[in-house]
Length: 570
Image: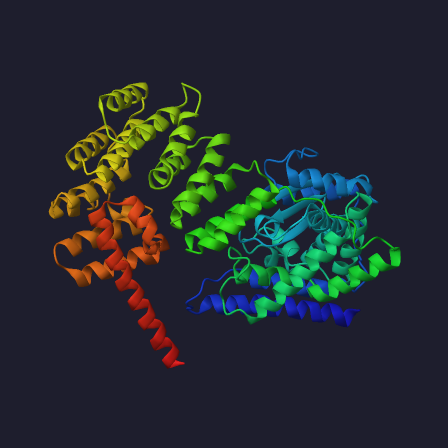
């Protein structure tokens, strides 16, 4: 045993020496203590094969240690208070633990890149948002939480602290004070035997809580497939999980035994206990949310059909999930299908009318079915709702021609929001868009100037004024509208691609075609929607859309030529 202790000391001191040496030399990558902490965890996993010399920690002492460690990860949680979805599932799974003196608290680490889960002494279970996004049933979540609960129930978590205390006796406490919270050691995982034991006991806890063993087997099969695909990846996210970075998956697989081995071990447990492999799983309450986030990412990448199908599946799982309803209307519109966008927007606004979706409904209706759009917008209720004022502007814009009645109604809506300058600017900008589309450029320019004066920070007013000025032949004014400091500057707008597209049209109109193509290339690189012909034609004037279509053709030719050169190079 003395030989093993000496080996452990040598490993830890060598790790500390490596960190010290690296910090003494200039490097081009950030230095963090995490690799050394993983070295410590690996060494501890070996040390766990040795008998513990320290006295077993009592439950009361474990609760004190857990409360201290959890301050970094569960700062606002009250003991035993878990009203959220994850907590409710966790509390069911924890009902049949052996150590009934340990209460459990479940916390979500709000980090999409944290694809892991861990348990701290004293019953604190932490699961990353990135891992939650990969699950497909409540039974899978129950198994994951059961695995972490088992680490506490089987004393794995508190034993890890006992080794920390033992290492301090050896004078190695410096390795635990490198600036990272102690829970990093728990993220690093346990010995293979302990991980497999937690799988077995966690599966049993989930089963006793009424969950199907199919959940555990399904999630392990998915992890095995992801592990396989990850090893073939070159640094890009796995295709099906576009929001999961490679490094995050590596962290998870590094801290656990191979998924295929875990699957086979779990399968053996189910067989030996004669549990039903095919017992149905429960719907995963968080899945529509994560599917909608994935669909939004696909929309941003210009993968319209995959985004539409993902949103549609989220709505199939939960027909009331508003983010999916609104998102589907948005991606249908951006994909260039006005009729589908109108149908989706009608469904979304029937539940909760939002400004963004009503805007889509009106614009899609103008291009598809005007009567249905007017009817749907007119159904918006609640006279005190700001959205109603917006809907009235959109209905006015949908009128076959602007008349005294429409403008009188518009003025009433402006009066209704007189105390809110941002809403004033929003309504004026929306009416200006309808005027711009109808060719009433002078009136559109006046509305945009009034919008800018009422709320100078409202960027869309200046951006649309650039389009209107350009349409009126005032290219210098359009350029000025887009300059920094005028409300449309590059540093003030998240959607830089919209600005670059406007600049491209201005450059084209003054005869600088090469610059226009370069600017449009940047616009399309920022948002693929600029390559959608129907969307361009449904959004801009005939003249501007004609220029944008020519720029689309030039950009497509450039891409094809670039692809040809790459093929030849290989």
